[in-house]
Image (cartoon, rainbow, N blue to C red; front, side):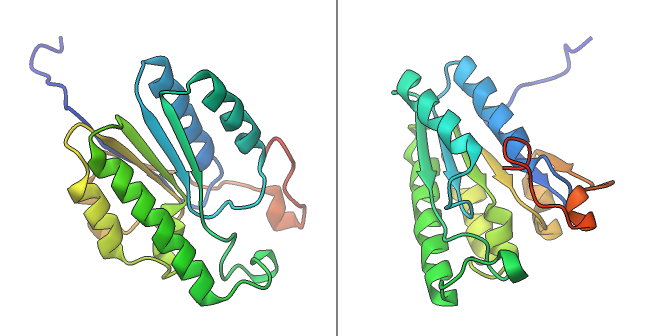
Length: 188
């Protein structure tokens, strides 16, 4: 049935949209890759504060010492009203995003990683902390054997032709819209 199909050495996966589940999907992808014996770099661009997945990733790093690298970058939410990181200037946000991007590009180009996950990088681009050219270069300059996962809202539609898999997480309903805060273990 699939005799006409081929496999690729690597793919670019995008999880975007205004619905919940982008980070969760990338964490599932990380688990799948680790289970397959792949070497993974998981890089977060926004979530500088302690979120529940950080505890799990820390424990996974102890087990997958040679397979998993975790980088927590960024300075928190930027330009998000009451949720914005307090006492952090625009320049500090940009510098943190650029430093995190430099790490991501280094891992993606190195040839040492099978999968590099850039959680919330799309937000950093959409918010103007990084340029679309940064995102395009990450896709273009990665090692040919390095798969890439890019998450966050508002992935630039003009770059869709450069990716292999794109999923738009559509919000049907979220309790935040009814003025309920996020639940630990569910939302963060």
